[in-house]
Length: 188
Image (cartoon, rainbow, N blue to C red):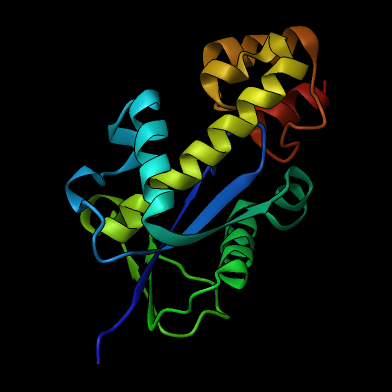
C-alpha cells in the first residue's frame, strides 16, 4: 500500500506581532520537488510564485492561533493549536504527519517530528512556504492599517525599526503582550 505523507510547519513564533500560522500539506505525485526549499532560504517574490504553484499541486490547509491565544496559552501551546486547526481543515487524510521541529500536537496520531524538517523533507518545505506566504501577506495587509510599525517589511519580527516604533507609537492590539519587549513597554 502506498503511504500518504503530510508535512506540517509553522511560522511566526518569534514575532512580536500577529498570529502564529501553521500549514499542513500533502503533495501531488507530479509536483516538481526541486523547487521546494526551506521558506527562509528563498526571496519574498520567489516564495509567492512557488506558493501559487504548490497550491495547484497539493492538498493543504492553514491554521492559526491569534495574538490573544498566544498571550493566554504561550507560544508553544498556541503553535500546537494552530497545527491542530490546520489538520482539522485538511480534506485528504494522510497515513503519517511529518512535523517540523521537536513537538507535534498530542491529538495527532501517526506523527513524526523532524528537527530542521523544513530543510530535509519536501512536504515540510512546501508547508513552510505556504505558511510564510500566508502570514507575510496578512502582515502586509495589517501594515496598511498600522504603517508606523513597518510590518510590510519586518512582518512583525523584532527589528530595530519595529522596536523603535513600539517605543514611539505604543502597543497595538496585534502585539503579543506576553513577549518581553512589548511587556516592558506596557509596564513603564
